[in-house]
Amino acid sequence: MEFPRSQSDEIQLWITFEARKYTNRQEGRAAGGGRQFGGRDAIFSATLPVPPNMSSSVSANYERGETAVNPLIEGAMALAGEGEGRLRVLGSFASKLPIIKGLSPGFIADLTTSGYFGAVDMDQSEMRFTQMEHRNFQFNFNMIAKNNEESAVMEAIASGFETNALPSPSRITNEKMFHPPLWSWYVMSREGRQFNSRTWAGQPQTSVLTDVRVNRTAAGGAYATSSGKPMAINLALNYTELEPAVRDPEGTRILSRSRSNRRASF
Image (cartoon, rainbow, N blue to C red; front, side, top):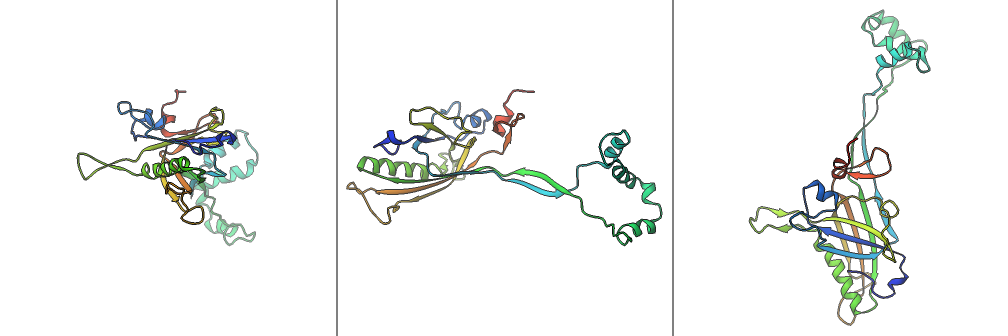
């Protein structure tokens, strides 16, 4: 489905969203969803103008932890003549030796916490990486129908996003549900040329639709076309990537876990 139908040649950039069946196979996840024996074709597709409000976010978690710098190694390197500040490095190296730590505790204390020169111990822990939060993508579309045909397409697109954000019931047992579809999207020109995902889309990996908000009174009230369908709809979408993202060894691409695991060996 494509919206709008009228004057579409005036739109420079389009974005297409595609939903496919969930899969736990890495090959299918890397390809945006779908199953080898259940079909990889999209079960829902919608093409809209690239919105003025489109954003992505990357968030990493760090916590304070013990420094990864090893004084013994640094001290050995200083003895070998590598690096600057050899005197300080050697001092740190010596302070780690039990025999030095055991010499004249009163003298050591006098030079540190209560020393004449005011030398004190300081927490020298550093920020240690723990995990990546899954990336988020947000889109906000304002759709206004110019005729009954466009209002029908507009309504079908909004309902399609709402429907395909949901799980489906199992036909075998009431205890289980089938996972909601997996999503992918891409941006293309009005001539149909697909752009590199880095240019406009933010290199999205296979995602899940975590939030759909539809305002069917976006015209400021309950305004309808002659067919009785909404005249204006505001559609807000939030996607979260299914798997943690990493960068490739060259630092030029973003990869999902499945795509990273399937890349060529080094």
